[in-house]
Length: 318
Ligand code: SF4
Image (cartoon, rainbow, N blue to C red; front, side, top):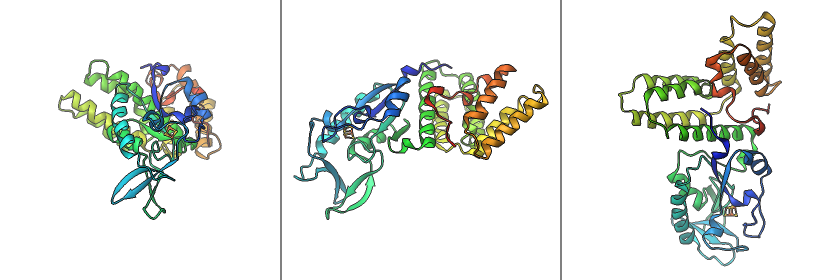
């Protein structure tokens, strides 16, 4: 199934797009997101503080816990903006649902937008923990299945790759469920994504496949259960060991086609990846070459071999 990349809509904190919406009138432009990922998605920018009417510039705020309740309070004048932010967020989250977002990238550490790491102060003025910003909390509670990350964590190449991979799978899934639901369609989907899922968890991928064989004909329910299990599997890290397993699995399909020299080439390149001497993109490129050369139809359909556009420069780290 082909996904029109520019039909993928991603929510994002507006300051990451370079918009001057921060409390001090500045921005937090993220060049990779805007310049690279931005070529393949449509951004839906959200700035809870500006859009709820707090203006630019504004007094900086922080989260403060009092009697078990977390509030959004300005640092100097102690003005409480919790009700304004929460009521705006509830409404905004409802509106965002209509846009079918395939993911959301939040600004880390923000008391409104952070996904998990906004500082929470006690009444004594000391930090006593961390948690989500008020808008992010509202969004996640109502959209827990949508891939979400923050810009800080996305600087880690493995986390970035995992997030973008989930976004592309989720966007394809949204296209899939626009067509008539059927067991055969779901079985085909599973076949297309089998190696990709195996790279995250071989045992859970087998269990997921078994789910398709033991269904009780309630198709809608099966789609629902399959989707949540699949997204959980994709959240697991695709380690080198699990990728090597998937690569060797692919190599097994060529046994009778390859020359001795070609077999040696594949063994060497997978081992080089295993030893962290080359990034994943190297064995993937070689295997893609043989898939096309020997016209292996089962492999040609494997999303694992082309999960996202090459221009995103993923799978290139060691
Ligand atoms: S972190 Fe959130 S609230 Fe703060 S400027 Fe960025 S988008 Fe606006």
